[in-house]
Image (cartoon, rainbow, N blue to C red):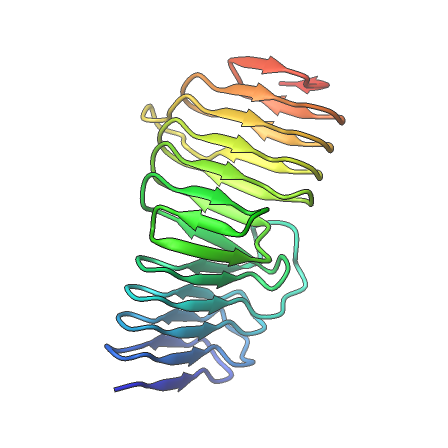
Length: 216
């Protein structure tokens, strides 16, 4: 059975079933949680900071309108899951997360593989949690956070923020390329290589740095 679930004015938890469901956070204060489960689902975020997870199937995830467009905090969180998903960040209103390893994410070309073959639109924030991921940014401001393994990030243009979020000994040897723009590159555990590129770049917690105007 295909269900339609609509959130109310308070904090909502919407969980779809086995069919192709439509879940909408509505215009409540949130934050809301939407889980599509099985089937080819459509999940729509609301005006608050929501978490959308598609689950198995070929899902469509759309962020809602939100004023905080540029940093990870305050955004909707979108996770497609397995299947070939459409992840729509509404021009920077959401952060896409990928937990299966490894993933290859190219924001400029709008593709992400590893948890299926996904289309990503309007995404300026990515968080990976698996091992040996590759992330390519856009020519605008991006926020990219990596997890375990030996990850590689090409931030490209714009004033980007790239960070290894691993604080344990299992952190890998990452390589971060800032590209054009005034970037902030931050390593963590492991032997991290930070390459600033053009612009006024800041690099921290890197074992090897180059092209960085500020090093800490």
